[in-house]
Image (cartoon, rainbow over all chains, first blue to last red; front, side, top):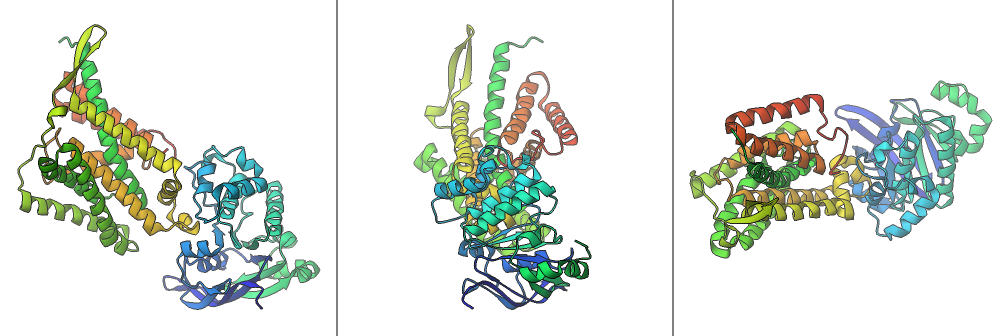
Amino acid sequence: MSNILLEVNDIYTYYGPSCVIRGLSLYVKNKEIVALLGRNGNGKTTTLRSIMSLNPPKRGSIWFDGKNITGLPPHKCARLGLSLCLEGRGIFPGLSVMENLRVPVCSDNQKELLKQVFEIFPELESRKNQRAGSLSGGEQQMLAIARSLMMKPKLLLLDEPMEGLAPMICKRLISKLREINMKGVTILFSSSTAKHALDICDRVYIIEKGKIVAEYSKKEMEEKSSEILQKYLGVVR
Amino acid sequence: MTVGWELVALQIFNGFTMALAYTLVALGLSTTMGLLGIVNFAHGALYMMGGYFTYILASSMGFGTGLACATSLCALLGIILFLCIYKPLETRSPIQVLVALIGVLLIFEQLVRDFLGAEPKMLQIPFYLSGPIVFNLLGSKISFSKYYLFITVVSSVILILVYCLFHRTNIGIRGLASIQNKEVASLLGVDLTKVGIIIFVLGSILAGIGGGLLGPVFSIYPTVGGEILGFIFVIVIVGGVGSLIGTFFASLLFCLIRSIGCIFLSPNYVEIIAYCILIAIIAFKPRGLLGREKVLD
């Protein structure tokens, strides 16, 4: 399956003595949008952090674009084309919007990349000299994603991108993610609410207690979404 | 008691000059503190070494070249400290790193005491910078120290360069980002070791040049670094950690209180009043003078 961009094989990740991820495996194909759904505290964030080596797994392996990246330092993972937007946006509040966009390291022409990013997020261009900390929650999320795009990533990892955003903003964000995906960027995102996630993704993984317990295609999700949501996420759609 | 306005003007100028020099040293502490997350006690050692290196080198190669070489040696010391002390202890608890940095300060103090003696050394001002410059201001003649004018020019140029480095270059912006959030910076491809070395080199340069510039104003002795560190730390906190403009204003406030207060009161009382004002600022503005989250403005 050469089409696979990311492959996580049987990883175990610990916080001190406690095992948080217990034998998790998943894969993401090129140009897919995949969601990692699960209740809070079941290991979604830790899975993404493990992939980027912020919390490297103690066992198992992670392959990206044909390379073993298990335990590779985060900045090296980033330079290979992996980009993670942390939960809570992780923008630099004391820097301007433009300065935030100049932080990522990329060998491509920065001016050209900025032009492309402002085409997707025109609202950021008009606020480029504004302090990032003074942006609204939705704008901060857009900035975090725009900043990731400044690295020209092959795979964009998003941790709870819709968390705390108003429904209108979520819809806008989803359309932006679709646009980014159409430009060839693969997306893996985590979410504890399925409402918006199911509208956009090609496949869904359900995570429970640090393990993938189910995997559904878009078609399967459409057919039995209520049943799945109630069983794994405790919600009725 | 009548005080001539010429004296007040002179003291304001002196206070302004000292504020710029202290801002240099405080900014170095502020950047390394931002990266470490703790007080960088080694900064005091680098300030002291800047003074001693300038003292030794200026006698053979002249003040200007001696100061430049002393600053380069401090930058080298900064790299060594980063690679040999901070980097190996990076994953340890902050208190362990703090103890190691206090150890560095004490080791340097002891080494200097053993090799150069404990008695204070006075750095000589070169002849072309000694003496006063007389200005005619509103019909009155005011004489400013040439050397203080030199400190003002050099410090201002360096502060402008530091500001441009942090806001006009990618590497500077990446440094600022790392000071704010190391984890996110690394996720954006920033190599924290490289950025750490750059920030330590910059901090060491600022400490070294501060030590060299202030050497002829105050004497140089083994514990001078530890003594100045307390004062500089207060400036950093009052100005707001990582704030260039806040650091400058805190430094200016403190230095003006000191220099103008000395006209009317004994220096001891002036120190007490100055610290009381600074404590009040911290009490009412816990995030520093500017009162908002800023990193090097």
